[in-house]
Length: 478
Picture 1 (cartoon, helix red, strand yellow):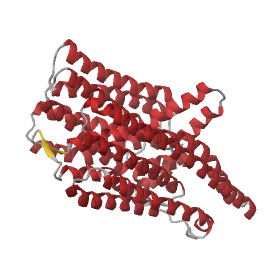
Picture 2 (cartoon, one colour):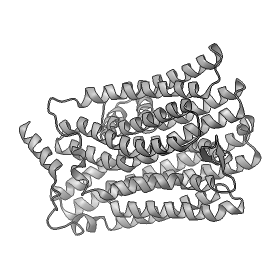
Picture 3 (cartoon, rainbow, N blue to C red):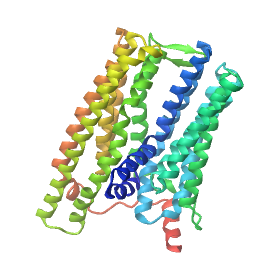
Picture 4 (cartoon, rainbow, N blue to C red):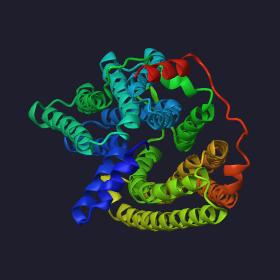
């Protein structure tokens, strides 16, 4: 994540438990803010709808709307966001800060088009009322906006305001729902969705203000300058897309299997499975936070030292020593992350067995939840390792592994769904991909010097298009 590792390291370098707690809190907000906001909000609202005797059909419709908005906004945003993240990092490194704000609006426009048009087509043909379609589409577009904003807020320093953005937005949404249910005694799903929209609109607006303040410059360039490296990093677009599809493939297969059903004659879902996935995903929040805090802040200095030894013509002994130190840090931090996440996964299983029956989980759903918790454990460790591979620019290896996970997850779920299985196929697919990713990372480390010195082209290829020329001209005029 561009910039966040450096800023968090400054917090961790300060002594005291309070500063370390702040670092964990800030990294949590930047890393998982939109995801956690959505999951926690929906969980609370679902409980409130149940408590206020909102009908089962309406509760299912609300859940279906949120799941579709969240799932497909995540998939669509992932098409460009990994590529945009790399572009932001390159712009910061090359001194093209003046191109960042225009690039934000350009990437937001692209996401809005590739996501908004299919959504409008879908909504045009489903038989839900217009008063549901409108707030659903708005929620979807707001989530698309927030996913785009998270790429850029990771490069900002004002973590306190970022945290306030998510907290205030969630509070507004929850306050709106409480007011509707308990003060106005309105049980209408369009109004409930509208309250959620209001909360996410507040978050999106506050983040936009921060992005504008941080990246605003007097120099104007094309909003599509982020496409300057589109021919250089096309694999990142494929990796982001396939990675998002891989995450949800098991759910899509379940939707169209024997456990699937139509909600409101519009949304294909497998409610018993989807709700188990929803809660199981909460168990991997620690890994998402620990990666940013414990791995990026500890790993990046060693990563930089290794390449400084290479670029500054250090001796073979210096390079080998830097490589060994980097490998030791990776091994140490990964061991810690895997251990901490395993602890939280076991706790999640225990808590699920004890408390999930109180919110209506059957014994079969609890079994599914337990399997999914362990599957998400493997999935999140794999995600951490894939990000490490991208640190070393192993775009080809990362793409192949994401394709493998998508294939394993889809095929295994396709076979198992008709055998009555729910969740075990995802568990197997995630662990097989984890083993393959570990093998790839070990291979990369063993051959790192070869990839650094011999696998690079003798002459660096220049990717020239009108946007690279705009960037170069604008940089010269500064």
